[in-house]
Length: 243
Image 1 (cartoon, one colour):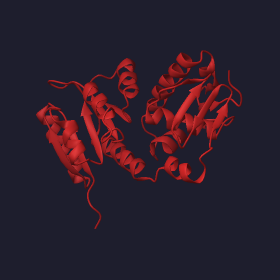
Image 2 (tube, one colour):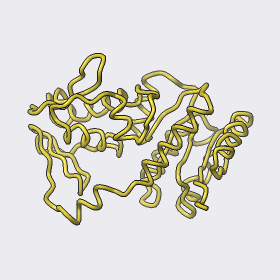
Image 3 (cartoon, rainbow, N blue to C red):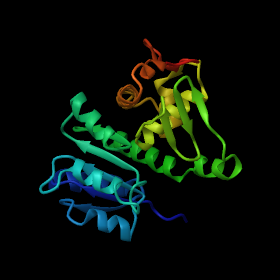
């Protein structure tokens, strides 16, 4: 029998914490729930979980501070992290995703949706790293569209000679678009290919990542963000040539 995935869950509301932990446990996961983030990074480094669920509004260091600490530690930088919060505005979603969250779910949420999204995080994390395989098989794997150059093995992006600092999901999103340049990808297809989500869920996750990706491209090379085109009512397409 395979080992149950280990989930660290940080939530200061006792009722929500107990209810959510119970639902995850019933779904076959081992859950360790915490009232605040004190010592979270150290716990993750010593005994890495399979995923971390973080509330934003916490006593002491808030969820965004904890997320940045996880991403800034070599032992925890690649842990899958989902933000769970009552703050549901577009600004809050962008801030959370831009800080390196892999997904974002606003309260109140249904337990079935939460479990599906956590399972998607776990599936994505369990897949072999394509970048690692390509680094051995094809060290000169540069992909280029106009001024944008992406190296899957080095996981770097450069626009007009300037490095673009992307989160993991922003990088994976851009790579997927570049691999399919000229082709329209629906939000559902991007959820499946980038997040490992095989159901029609919160497609706004894709929109938020596209927004921050465009902003970072524009900061490095103004005009390059126009390469990521919106196909209204369908999804996104990377133009075959970019500024």
